[in-house]
Image (cartoon, rainbow, N blue to C red; front, side, top):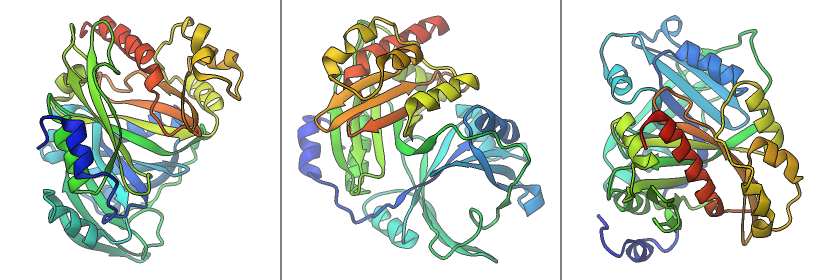
Length: 379
C-alpha cells in the first residue's frame, strides 16, 4: 500500500499503462435496486434509455429480476431480488440503490481473470461459460473497492440480444433518446487514506496508469476538501477517478456519501454526449434535476477558457460548466443525487478535444454541492 510521497511513488510503480489486460470498453453497468420495474421506467422516461432485454421468473430465474436498458453504447442492468433474504437484499439494505457491477468487455475473460488474480486481485467469479441457442459467453470477475466488482465479459461467440439467460424486451413504451452516447468515466469514493491503495490496485493488478492527480489545494472550498486521482487503462477507453476525503472545516461530499452508502462505492457515472445543450434541455424537460450554478460564474468564464464554438447564453441558461486544457475544452453538468440517499449522481459531459476532468470548475461545482448538503443538514 502506498502511504507517503504517493504521487511520486505511484509514477515509479507504473509510468505508463501496461496493457496486459486489454479492455475493449464498458460492457454494462449493473445496479442493485429496490424495484427494478419502476427504476426501468425512470431511466426510460427521464433519461431516454431504450428497452433491450429482461430476465426473471418468465426466463427461469427464481431469485432476481433484471431489466436491461441501452442508449447508444451505454447499457444498464437494473436488478431487484425476488427472495426475502440473500446478497442482493443485503446490498440494498446496506447501500440503498447503487452500482454493484462495472462490467468490462474483453476478448478473453479467462486470461483477464488469470492476469488480475495472479497480481493480487480477489476473485469474485472464476471463469465460467454460459450458452444458449445464440452462442456462448465467458464470464469472470474480481472484487474492487467496497462491494463493487468488475466482471469480465467475453462475447465474441455470442449473437443474441444481450446475454444468455435474457430474452428480448420490446414494450410499446419507448420514449425518444436524449443523445447520450457512452460512459466517459466512472468515479469511485473510498474512505480516509484509501485512495492510493486503490490507485495502486488499478496500477499493479489491472495495468492502469495515472492520468492526473488533484489534492486538497485543487479541490477545496472554505469548508470542505477532497483528494482525487484518475486511473486509465492502456487505450484510454476506461477511466476511473478515485476520490477520498480530505480534512476540512465541515463534512465533505465524500464523507456524506460514505456515511449514507455505508462504505466505498461508485459516486457517479459520466455520460458523454455530442450536443450537451440538446441533451441537458431534454433531460430537464423530463424532470432530471441538476446542480445550480450561480450566474456570476459566466461573467468571467470566457476570460479563463477562451473562445468556444457555442453561444454562452444557452450554456448560462442551463448552468453548463466550461473548462479548457492543452488539447481543447469540455462542457459538463452534474445532476443532483438521483436516489433518496445522497449518494449516486450523474455527470453529462461533451468533450471538444479536452482530455481533462474540469479542474477549473471545481470551485463552482463544490460550492454548489455544499449548498445541497446544507439544505440536507449534512454539511
